[in-house]
Length: 272
Image 1: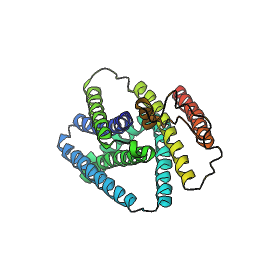
Image 2: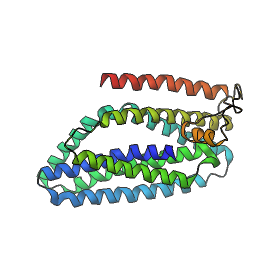
Image 3: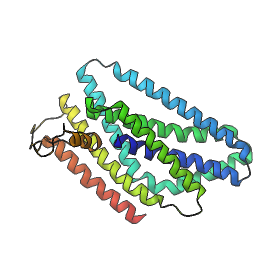
Image 4: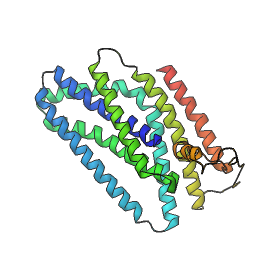
């Protein structure tokens, strides 16, 4: 639940923020008559995101071969890891320039009466976040197998979206500077940890498909201390990819990823 909450909070925050800034900027330009085109783009983006989710699930279900299914799931996990990492490290460093660039685009569209451009602007903002959310949910489902609860994931997802909407609404209505940078910083760190768990699960899938060597099937076993099948262990497994009896290659990849990207994360925010 917490992983889905964090993902939709992060994705929803960016989508709501971009759409909210667009609406606020139109208001400052005394061009509220264009608001409806922003809403049309948002609606279209949501509809297409849902359509992509359905098609994506149908395509995955067509793979009856366990070998090809493992390869496909590994590919999804690896792609989700790459996108999550990019989002956590680099995207927020470009947030300010992204917002300024959007304002310039809106200026140009309003001056030319380009309503199609306004629709497309909000459409892309919602579609991009929607596609990423679909990708991450699929990755979480395939990394946790039967332990992934659709009901809990939906509850977490809705809660994340509601909180994202409230944060953006408060930020746009408040005259005070909301410490959104600190919020992004620490959620980015959590996302890096989640991505490390997805990467570890991808290694497991590739080993099951016999595309990577196993090396040492079980490096150690601490299930007597914290079993990954227990209540708290299942939570850690779903959120961070915790494994109480990891293989050597899985642990090396997980540790290498964490050491590398936590360093990038720390340096990125020190330089910004």
